[in-house]
Length: 253
Ligand SMILES: Cc1cc2nc3c(=O)[nH]c(=O)nc-3n(C[C@H](O)[C@H](O)[C@H](O)COP(=O)(O)OP(=O)(O)OC[C@H]3O[C@@H](n4cnc5c(N)ncnc54)[C@H](O)[C@@H]3O)c2cc1C
Ligand code: FES
Image (cartoon, rainbow, N blue to C red; front, side):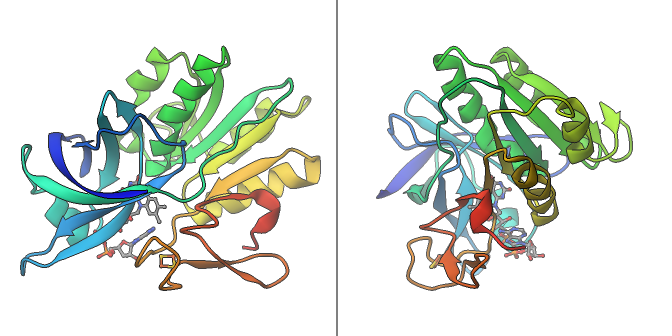
């Protein structure tokens, strides 16, 4: 883990308030699912940190995909290429590799797609394919479709309004495709409702699953207790250091 001042190599506006930002970290890589605490400027000049997953490593540049949802991300969207921001990372526990046969499945909702680009690259390097179930509200909320297809990802897309892919919820499509045979593992990242639905489908079937939670975070290093989640025994766990990726059986929704 390093706290580094990183120059912005590129900053690209995508559709509907989504952005891609490339930070010159000089890293060789990260474990998919890990995140960083990125400085975002505030209007009064104060710099705050916000947690973001890493989407991919391109040479020495680390890419983040983000959506403008509030003051911090709004201010971040105004930062120009060539400026520099501090980034603390890579932080937390990412997705674990599994051994054995069977499909490697990802389930992503909204900007929860971010860690799956690097995860797809990691599997490709092992000669494997990521079977990705990607759900969004509408077509405009689907990101990285071309990049995922270039890596050879087997994509199953759903939108709630039917504007692209199948209409409905992504977990319904997951259950339909794997009605007869179980995958080796399911990794998921997205809103809590999606993670809960994946957990409820996978665990009773004995399918190992890992879930990436997006709790609000203050420090990212285990100090402030701002990110705690409950496990089934009622114990609190810090998402920033024990997660953000947890084994499915370790989370109580
Ligand atoms: C481990 C981790 C990885 C993340 N990865 C990404 C990513 O790859 N791309 C991305 O766009 N965002 C990601 N997020 C969420 C991102 O951190 C928040 O959207 C951001 O902090 C909001 O800052 P803000 O100042 O713009 O919004 P605020 O003004 O702080 O909040 C605006 C609104 O967004 C909601 N909000 C704030 N934080 C979160 C959160 N963590 N989850 C859900 N809602 C939130 C608030 O409740 C409020 O309604 C991640 C969060 C975590 C913990
Ligand atoms: S964010 Fe501070 S303890 Fe996790």
